[in-house]
Length: 484
Image 1: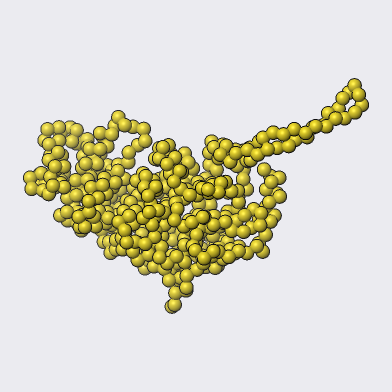
Image 2: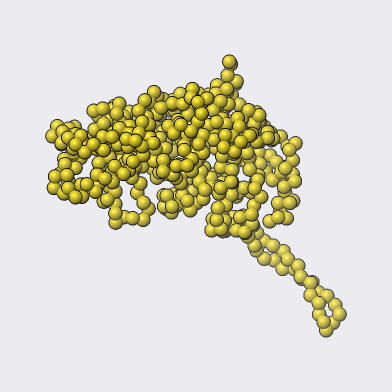
């Protein structure tokens, strides 16, 4: 492998090879090893899957280039899952605004400094449910069911205990229905948690709904009341399970007021073509994943309701956020003007959260799969087999001790194009890409400092400090500057 890269790399590293982007906005994937020319995704409507072990460049080579590549498409919204305490937001939000784009940051964990306060918004993660109820949407119950499955995720291999997860979901769904129908201003995750955490108020509301509630709530309320009256032991277990699912939103919890003062909805953000940054607390990203899963679900719901133009979801740390419904819908996202960049540490990480079959479905329905850095030998071996083999020609030289003469020979054989060991030790600026209909490509990574004109304007990284030295290798389309 090293011989192959040595032959190809010098041309690939030629900094004089400048290239211009094509007219439409497409994400840049990398640079050719042969002549340094940029490689763009085949279209800007299909979803992608990116794997990268720690230090592989998920932020600098995927998330930031995606935002910069699509900045000129002013009819497209972008939603970025900024899992590293505002790392992407701090670098890009002012840049995006300077080019006339509407920007917003959701920072319910107060990770950003006061200087970013003008960009911060409050957003109710259940706004899609309120909108569906008010519009008398036929999909309301399905939307609520999606939300309850985000609160209480369904493990991949535990069918025996489904009952112990489904009944607490019934509690959550009834609480949400009561609030959106009677007190929509209180229908936030914190509002649901406060409602359920008061046993007397909760059972009083259940009794009222059982007697005089609307058809949406009456039957559910009657079932829960029956359980409370006739099986108090099991009722308590299910009730406590529902409360446990809402712990981060409970009174005194880190997100008790999240969305309580919302001034805009997910649908409005998409219709006005905002670039939205969802700022997470890096220390507790896995635990708070439920909250951001609710937001991504709401954005997906708003987009599929129609009338929102095109939207890209940059879903970093996809393995730590409940995303089963999003993955299941990847087969139809394109029809609704939606696409998702799923970014994870490894395939095994995604399988742990969502199961083997669902990840296989995801890989079947994305146009581009990138491996920025392999996390384990098993995945490298899998890709090595998929890349196939090539024919080899070997020579031999034999010496016959009985007769003082030499004889030579040639033989053919086959060997892996890249072995698993070679893939594991790819140079840090090299990656493997699979493009549907094209095949495997080994190329250089395209990083944020390579993209003109933006590479000179990216703000310092607050986590790692400083700015990557601009090294413009390709000029991509840029919208007109905002007049100040």
